[in-house]
Image (cartoon, rainbow, N blue to C red; front, top):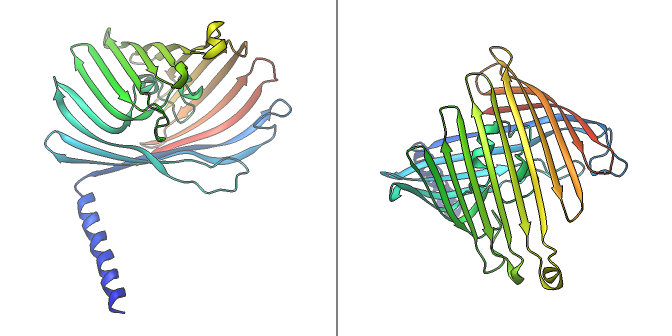
Length: 326
């Protein structure tokens, strides 16, 4: 009995200390999801016709804390719906865990740990509707939003840059001895227009390396917000395929626009086209919807989501999406 009492007291003390420390930091997060209905789909499609469900597609829980002057940390957990028919509960995992040392190297911030990559960070922020869909690179699995490694992020006048070295597999553990190199350089051409050039190189076994090149242009005026993102991913072949020059290239382009329609109402649209020369296909995606914010940090977004694969019949979904921040 004495051991039980001592153990319970220790747990209580740990909880009190944890709460006290948490009070020094900042807790934030958001969640988004939707009710969707598949109005049309090809026979045998992964998401069949008439399938419908309420789903939480993303939940973030973030804790930020300054541990010394100019040095801060972040822990972010992520969870999402396990998928239609899985019968499983949502399982959280570590999205980010890093230390940020402000102006550590030549005025640039140093990030150490599992931190965000520059692969689509700028484009996703400019698109502004991650609650509706991922950016074109993210959607087509051209890289990862975070990686374990070290990064430098800084600014020089109208230029902003990110240089990073990471394992490559994102939140997963390292699988080989190669590393992935990331580089992003953006330029504020005006108060409204931002341009970015991006490249990465992933060193993989058997010389099956991957290289991605991307350009992005985003415009944000008083009313209209628009942008275009284009990329090319080259997957190097190995062995006989390499001798035959059978590298695989995946390329795509994404265009989006958002326009205010009222004090708390916006309209948005997006068009993607992605080609894969290994499959000799070009797939398209069309999104259109409305964004209504009835109160601060709450968004209701009815939208139409149309996938146009090269070959099968289109998939057409009607969605009532939502997002809220805390």
